[in-house]
Length: 144
View 1 (cartoon, rainbow, N blue to C red):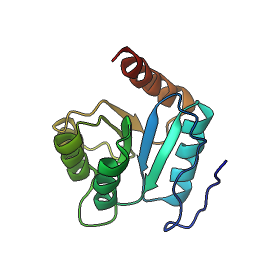
View 2 (cartoon, one colour):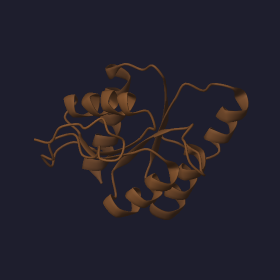
View 3 (cartoon, one colour):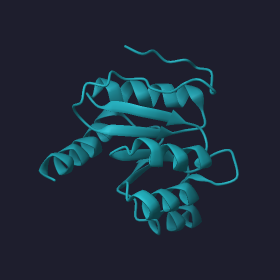
View 4 (cartoon, rainbow, N blue to C red):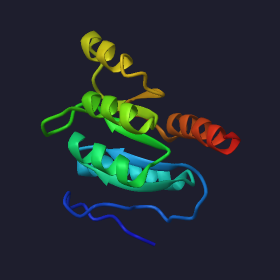
């Protein structure tokens, strides 16, 4: 079993890789929030295939590890935000995006919907909301 490291530079895989469930890439620039989300994903029986902290890293990692879904914060540190990263991941790798955000202004939501996300989770969200969405991804994955 791998454990979390709260150091932003070395935190990566967080859940046992048991081959079941959904492979999730988490893109969140706040370490403690990334930890919380990772624990939630693992508790629900899915695999955290990576945790990254910037839009640039998310595009690279998505291409490398090919997760089933990306949990993407909209506001990220770095040159590109979560919306730009999601657009690039969708165009290059056709990986579905679930936005996790505290932002709810109409301009941001309009930009987000234009990227055709699978879903939105408004921070703070609870385990049941995440479970519902990841269960849908899992069913779609198993029927493919």
